[in-house]
Figure 1 (cartoon, rainbow, N blue to C red):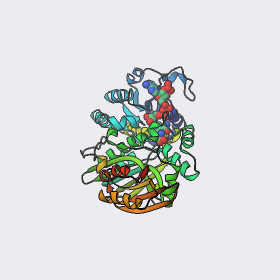
Figure 2: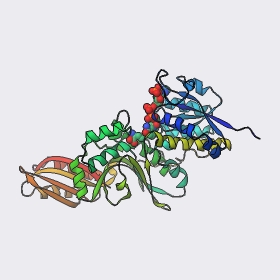
Figure 3: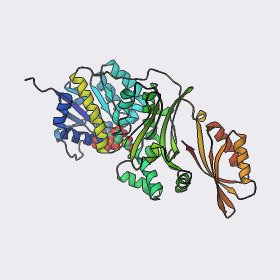
Figure 4: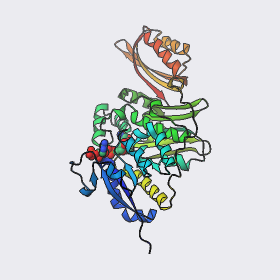
Length: 428
Ligand code: NAP
Ligand code: HSE
């Protein structure tokens, strides 16, 4: 009988995700052999601080020297779960140059340096897989790269940050205030150590950059993504949105238009009957529109130890299967086009505008006049009964170029009846 083939891997990082991957590997030992034809051994684990108390793994596996892994010819797969750009970028580069396959969950790295790393993987005949980097356990990277390769994708829109979806759900469903909901999201382990990346939309921006690159076969980096977070959304906006038949979500939106790619992250009022509107709590979901495939939606756990570990393990098993059949590097970089990324002010949106005005005759006509003069057409208006001489106006516009809308706001701010622009939120 043939001796069982053993594939050896190293973990870079033993934090939330790294320890989850190790636990999953221990739990799935026999299954892994049946699924791939080889056994998996985690031979080394790189950490920053060797002195930290670790649960679950044999202490002799830990090292704080990258060279122990890079120079070990038996290690065929490097599983990068440290996060951040450096030293992850250097380690992944060196691993690929040494002919080692790489699996990573690092969206920061891929959203800025994905192109160079994927090219390197192709050059060295290695796999570089990163399913867990976008929406955790939701299988969207492989779906876009392979399962939907037969369709021309025109839109990828998603709720791809669990923390902000959790906060907005709590604010909307139980009237929790923003600070309290954020604190709870942090306690539950959804948020990054510094939640700025979550609440300001940077985390979702990295994920939409990665998805847009794959969906449109043209490289988009995080620095090209317009981002706006949820910190200014109030309970009052959420209530008005509901009255108009919408829910507020933080969306990553990428669209392929005739004149280029539109790619952005910002809060949006979504009609209650859109599939993304029903995605609650910390769940993620990605909505796809394409020619042959029509519409599709993928939903699941976008963060957390075991959901993310499951996506990482899926990639590891894929690499193992490729190693067994000597066919690594089959699906490399798919960005073979060079489409322009449009400026945000050239995008077209509908808007929800909430303002406080002096309750004087002609106030509404005054504002409507300014909007009209700037090509902004009004679709719906609501005026709340005035308190202390100040009335609240809520306006929903028709589709308008962002540049025209911003120009109209500049003028509106200066008119005598205007007391305060309270909220400006785009409508999906
Ligand atoms: P984490 O809990 O902070 O763990 C990071 C691990 O990497 C720690 O074990 C740390 O070592 C090690 N590390 C960091 N810098 C290092 C360095 N310079 N040299 C050696 N080791 C280093 O992070 P995580 O939440 O598991 O996230 C890991 C990756 O998965 C990130 O790219 C993240 O964006 C991505 N991701 C996370 C989630 C999630 O829900 N957490 C979801 C999707 C994707 P010490 O233990 O010694 O500090
Ligand atoms: N902080 C991220 C989130 C973790 O809330 O979705 C997963 O990338």
